[in-house]
Length: 108
Image (cartoon, rainbow, N blue to C red; front, side, top):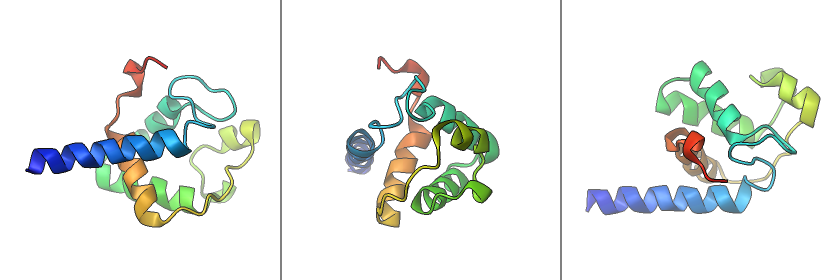
């Protein structure tokens, strides 16, 4: 049962990610925003633990701000990400998926 709950959570995160993030964040290529691989790498370097990664990334995505960004050069290049109006629990589901996914093995 625990395995099925974990699988559901991962699939839910995948669904949320694909429905909301890939519009701007390609998994491996920087097009209209930094690639998710690049974002994940920067956040994992700054916040190695899953808990800290999820907390900090979801907080920033909830209220994007250049002064609190760890990727200021990306804001200079692509502009500041808009506020998306997602509930914090949804953002945590998405950022948990981002933390756990190996985007370097992506086929996209």
